[in-house]
Length: 122
Image (cartoon, rainbow, N blue to C red; front, side, top):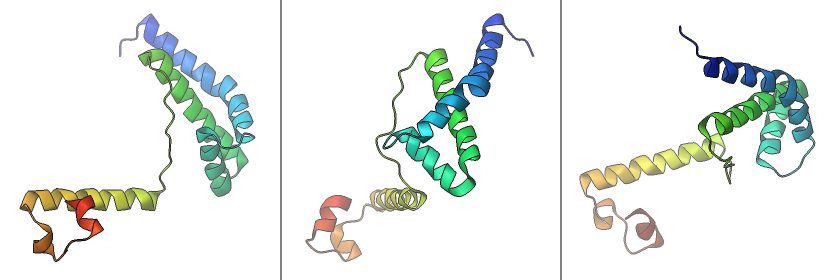
């Protein structure tokens, strides 16, 4: 594999951030309240303990910093975190809407009459 100086610099910078800077920042993030990263930290800490949460948050932080520097994009934190069951429900709704469009179904075909549901689905 052929590495350029730029690639080597990016890889070494990521390792430096991940091994030295990020754990300190991740530990500080664990003490914050009501931020995207602190919510992530608290979810991991609840399941696997504080040290695992520091490591996971440090990796996440290093990845965010690396993406920002390499791709030259600003950080855009998610506005809302969806839990797994919420993601599954959204996926099911998306598949149902796709099938409704595929078969060109109308509210009367399914058994819906005038209701609030028909406005959302159709």
